[in-house]
Image 1 (tube, helix red, strand yellow):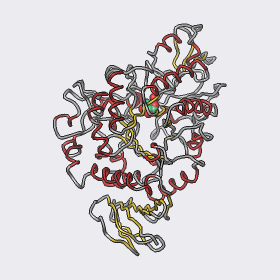
Image 2 (cartoon, protein in one colour):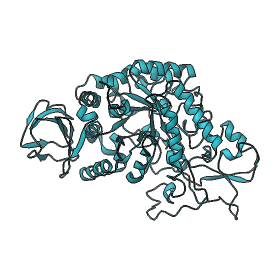
Image 3 (cartoon, helix red, strand yellow):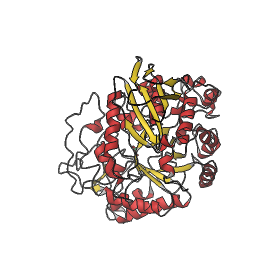
Image 4 (tube, rainbow, N blue to C red):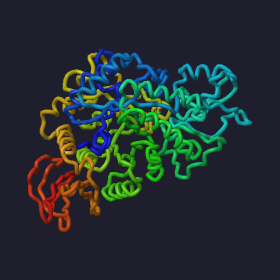
Length: 533
Ligand code: GLC
């Protein structure tokens, strides 16, 4: 019988930051051929899809998120042939390939922008967002860049400002212009025609800006000691505008011209706004990225509430998804500590909804301290010393204990983590207690149990540091109990049922019977198979 679920509903997505995954040519920077070499590892791990951060030609001011050609491959990463080979090989390994589409802004080196800035009457002038200076000659609005400083830069030649939600080398394109849309949609089709299985869409909430260019209101909660300068105003007129839904519907129609493709949107938005991006039936995103596990305090009650709120808010037919880390957020193991990172792995892989893993989290990689003179990330350069820089979570994958962790034969672009002798794939594969073994077993169980991949979710009341819920599919019921604290806790199983332990974060309680009471050690997570009542 045909599966009623799509691959992206049952599946697990794995994010690759290509500069740091595997270097095949010794230049110290990861590349496409390197990814191809490591596909067997990903297949064995049991994930279903890879999402690769941008690999298009780029001056690399924002490391690929400044695209100068939407339909090419940057020579740092390889060639179009390498890309075709990667897609073919990934598909042979049973892995889907998702690209990172960056439609909000191009590089200032993109030929479109070079033309646009050349004169006020250039046919591409309106492809970007140009405005006259304010009466005092300053920027047209108070809009701020995500990376600090004004979001407007004066172009001396033509005497107008252009808008950039991020760096001045990343001018925002004008999505109100139909020619821009057509060009961007052609780029999507270019990759879909090459067998790409979908896109993660970058900075989606920013695509459309207020037509009247009104000032954003000040943010009453802004604290310059705690927040980056981008938080000084509320992005009311620069993000999440109603016109976006039409654009998303157009993108969706393109994806739907191809079988079984998926669209995932990067949307840092509160839950009630986020879920709007599922759109009307068949017109929205398949998966508006849900980052709330990253943004919520790591505390049982807060997470239980989050899950309830998200589950309750999902529209009819909207499929949930969960994320614990990405290339813009400090590493999970650094945020909550290595012991809780194991509990978090169990949470992510037992919740209802598509999980996305960030490369290296499956071996327990931590943030790496970057000496000031080795900083690459423009965010850190613009707003130094506040911990906003993203280099620490982008360091090379740790494959083995050999020189440079087996990532490169050259000199790695970012430092290798000092713990790579212990925290690496080769060692962890042989260690029954390792993070990688835990991930492997959780993924295997999720793949084997419909209750985990596509079953129902029912939360139990959170008590103390315990987070507990039941996943079920037909008669099959699995109870997940996570101790987010450092004291042993006891869960009363009355009313829940009795059962047998299937898997624990400590990997030492398999098969143990549980009825009446379940004792959960500090930093422990348990999965129980409940006996049918
Ligand atoms: C997204 C990306 C981030 C990038 C920014 C600008 O937030 O995830 O890495 O810097 O967009 O493209």
